[in-house]
Length: 496
Image (cartoon, rainbow, N blue to C red; front, side, top):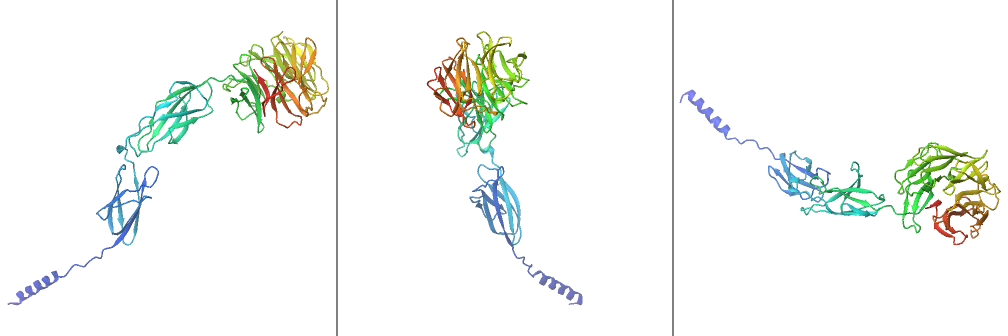
């Protein structure tokens, strides 16, 4: 064998021997995956979701709090598949590193294609177009969903008369009933129910409607002070129905029903200074009537009146009485008070078209009651300024008598305090006077008297003479007997 052949043979043997050596072995590493399955819309936990990987490792379920863990999984990149019936399957990529924990949060969306929307709410109670419904009403409806696992919730929406404005009266309730309170009388209400199943778009019912009952014939009006603010109430005699007519954050006092019973006038300081306002018998459609304010010695003692036909109001601004139409037009001066005095109260009778008025001043206890003719001219004096404070100037139905209150103690205090005020009826024809307060408790005052609608009784206020005690409204007959308590913690009565 020559030298070149030996060399070639040697190289071949070396190559063969080298090819027989084993490749180096890379050691396998492991990590873990820890995750949480949540609902996309509210991050609530999703339990019992199925979790699997590609390449495949193990399959497991999320626990009650939506958590899961895959331990000792080989390092590498995996596709994490999460699925549950009723949800859209989620695929997520996650990389596992040696001796490290990969943390993942899986967000699932509800699969609405697998869930049927609920039926439109139906079967409303009250039935649509019902009438004479109470001002507190329980709305009811029926609802249905073929998906038994769905929990339905509802919104209740109330619309105004022309359905341009809406108010959500209940939201997210699971009951098929909702109570409405403090509704207005004689009003049409429109309402709708919206159903939710948590998977589909909300489902709206038809818009239903009902009409509340007409406002009851509440014959009594009064003012009540709470936290330094007066508000006006209407009530029947047994107080089974009481309606608060004003609630505007300002004082509203001295309610007077129009002779036609369609409007209530009152004084309010809702604007700049106290003015006369009118409202409907249910407290709606409030309207300021005066531009020149009502004012006098004590604004809370002032008392104006309606004309007998209900077309005008007569009120005072210090030393003058003014007439004004019920719509705020026709303003004109009617009468002037004696020099140095102010008008405080007035009343208007159709009998002879006369006005009775009380003048006050210069001190609170200086008062006299006079009659004026239809042209505003002084006619006669009913009650002179004598020792002791005086209140009231109210005609009897027949126009023959005047009702008022006077303090028999003769006490004269700059703040107008009275110690023993009695109610009197003075007959202008016979010039006789009847005392209606002979049964009045000692230490109290009978104040602010007015006749009942039939003229057989007098409604008035009684209170302790300390000037700070609660005032209450009573009635008494024309002989001064049968005193009866009507309303506690109330004053400025009106009975029409």
